[in-house]
Amino acid sequence: MQKTASPKTYRVKSFGCQMNVYDGERMAEMLAEKGITEAPEGEDADLVVLNTCHIREKAAEKVYSDIGRLTKGKTQKKAPMIAVAGCVAQAEGEEIMARAPAVSMVVGPQAYHRLPGMIDDAVAGKRSTDTDMPADAKFAALPKRRKSAPSAFLTIQEGCDKFCTYCVVPYTRGAEISRPYSALVDEAKKLVEAGAKEITLLGQNVSAWTGEDDRGRKLGMAGLIRELAKDPDLKRIRYTTSHPADMDDELIDTHGEVGKLMPYLHLPVQSGNDRVLKAMNRSHTAESYLHLLERFRAARPDLALSGDFIVGFPGETDAEFEDTLKVVDQVRYAQAYSFKYSPRPGTPAATMENQIEPQVMDERLQRLQAALRRDQQAFNEASIGKTCEVLVERRGKLDGQWLGKSPWLQSVHFTGDADIGDLIEVKLIQAGQNSLAGEIVA
Ligand code: 5AD
Ligand code: SF4
Image (tube, rainbow, N blue to C red; front, side, top):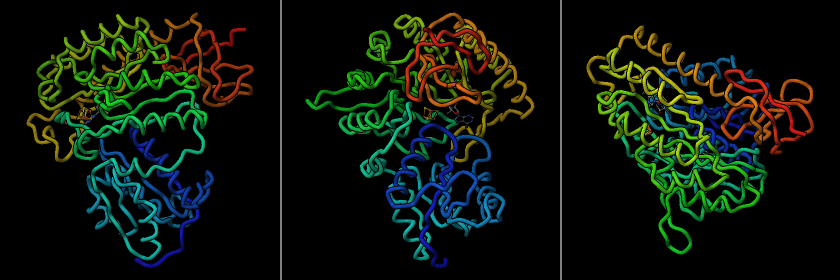
């Protein structure tokens, strides 16, 4: 590779989950510390970071087509220096280097603190790959926060030891690690000082977080939430994503006792059929999942529930799929994510027999999504007439209009006297499937 000029501007494109959004923001901060500034919207960037996701579908192909578009002048006039980051980089880094000469560096999700050095290498004409796994180093190397949106992410845990048979995460993000308590308390404080009113604790298995407080006492995520809630300037706490196996009594109690912990729980079930759940290596049954939700609802009766579903797992019969619809009917989710099963190379399910035909998956997904849409609409309609606080996140399209989130994570729009970061008392007056209209309570 030839020597090249140091990049002056960057663009980070993040795909996939919120953990990637968090990582993308941190990479952007590192680049800013290095004196590289974000390219204005619509203008060429000297350096483009593709922060990729590997969870479903043709992830790698998408990366190659993005690279092609960048080098062939389709995305921007001049071809940039290209870095491939994220989970595709982790899973297929060497292949990317071999197949795509336009890529200057490949950096896995646990190694992005090395990005600044890799850019220096690229400027000197050297391509580099780093897909080392331990995540602690990257957190230790985090730059300082300058400003924060009203709603901020904080990664507290990474990786997964659950090994659901369809899932690539244990291979791309590695084993579970918990970031130290003191580092998290410190980062949360900085986020709040930088303007955050709400913090969402992130992790692939967020409620598996463990740590020790200053006096050496062992803590779970509930303990961390209780500590963070003591900051008077932090108004809201959320967390995502949890596995049913890691939800303990203390966390359930915390939902009832800590008002700042928002009444919302994202708890993936994946399937409503016990044979499928076993084949997925999920450690819960449909009944144990439903029972768990009942306990959460008993602690916090207005809890909004969200979930993840996979249709068409290898061998799933029509009757087994119907069991998933039954769980949906019982839970009445406020919102949910649903996917067609996608074989991930290297996972046990990818080589299972009886892979399901695409048309069957399509049909099941449509039926499931119709049920989920029905429940989401019903949940939103049931909110009409309620008064709640809305955290204002940005301006709306109309003059004087604001967009924000209700405690139940619904998008709410209203007009009137407000500003970004305000918590405004709003009465919900109209419901659509994806958002609600409100009016400020005088
Ligand atoms: N195919 C389809 N969906 C998947 N998910 C994870 N792996 C796969 C896969 N191979 C879904 C699960 C998970 C969410 C983040 O993505 O529902 O909870
Ligand atoms: Fe993947 Fe299962 Fe771990 Fe979630 S719990 S990240 S679905 S292996």
